[in-house]
Image (cartoon, rainbow, N blue to C red; front, side, top):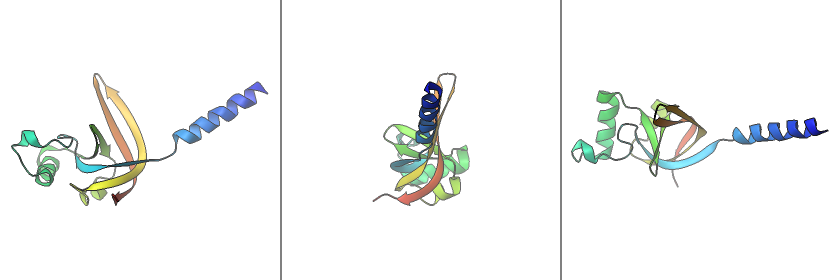
Length: 112
């Protein structure tokens, strides 16, 4: 009986962990993380486009101080500089002292 209870609890936690998240923020790039001041006062949309094209940056959703690299770069490009709500699954990875967050995009829509 105890094994069955543990199994049910484990399955329940696994299903809860798989639920998509809904994050609202601004589409920018992972190099600037929403702070484009160090690029000489460049317009945020222009800076994002330049970082993506010239510097190899990736589109990211900026939520407060967190930057989530987006799996669907072409969909993100359509919303560059805009406030959006992204539905997807978050993953975190650590390399040395650096932690990065990514978001497997299921949908992107303008924020309400």
